[in-house]
Image 1 (cartoon, rainbow, N blue to C red):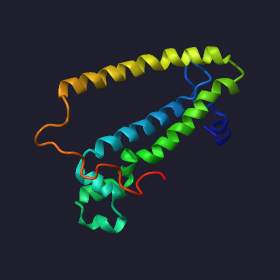
Image 2: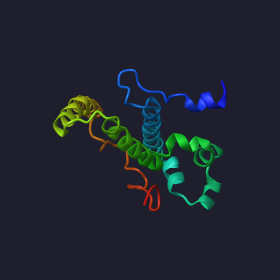
Image 3: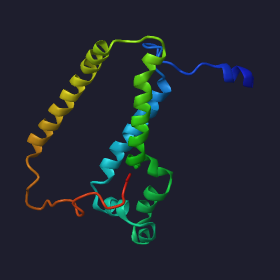
Length: 158
């Protein structure tokens, strides 16, 4: 394939909706998974301490913690920058139907978004409630609050 042909190749678009860019949906998914990864890692006290420590203070951490903090593996749990990427791409993706020449009234747009998002929200809420009821309250003997109690100062975005 020549460079002129490669430059003229169309961007991958969704088959269901030609105005959607599949690659942007994929990048939004990677950003969302990075946020989930950060939430999963920060339940461990050693990762929480590494997250808030100054770079000079990482010498006392095990090698695997330093590798997760200062290598490309950080992309799997860099939640702060991933949130920014997710919101910027979401704004772009939500505006694509208007740019593609298929304007909708606000009422049609709102109804479509509600019917798309509310069922997923209710499912997540029900799952969370079910897990909470199954696990019971966290005030059990032997369990304690997170060592820091809150996100370390200077961590994440300002």
